[in-house]
Image (cartoon, rainbow, N blue to C red; front, side, top):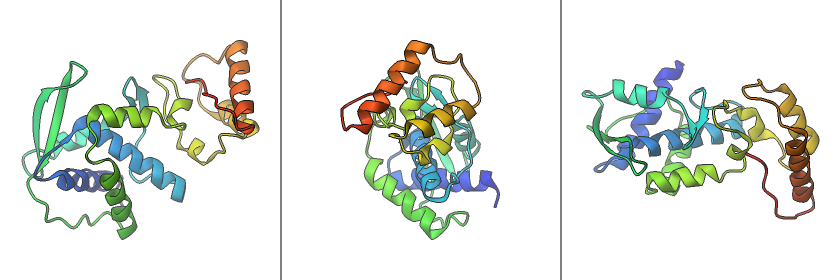
Length: 200
C-alpha cells in the first residue's frame, strides 16, 4: 500500500471529521503526528511513515501540508489566514464527507476517530501545548528528527535511554558532562517516584 495514499486518507478523515467547519494546518499536523505515534506504539510502525523534525511548535512534517495543498479543488478546500503566532495559518475544509478511506483499515479508522473525539476541538495553541508536554517529545531538541523507536522505551530505564542516545544520528552537538549529569539525575528521580523533568 502506497504511503502517500495512506496519508491522503488520513488527511481526508480529519478534514471530513471537522465538517461543516474546518481544521487548521497546525491541528492537522499534530493530529497526524499523534496517529503515527500511537500506531508505532501498537505495531512498531507508524501509520504514514512520515519523517518528523522538531520545530518551535513541536514535531512537523512538510509532507502533511504539501499533500493537503495538492488535494485542493477536488478534495479539500484550502483558505489562508493569520495564525495565533503572527504568521500564516491555513484552514482545510471538506467538499464531501461520503468517503470510504479505502487505504485505512477498520483499526486505523477507529484510532483516528478516537484521536478526533479527544482532540478535534482543540485550538492550534492547545494542541501544540499538548504535544509539547508529551514526555516522548521532550526527548528531542529543535531541528532533531523524531525517532519513534523511543516510544517503545521505558522512560525510567536509564540504560535503555542511554543506549538509544548512542544509536541515534548526531544532528546536534553531544550533551555536555553537566547536561548528562542532569539527565541521569532526572532519570534517577523518576525511578524513585520523584517529580523530575528530562532535558529537552
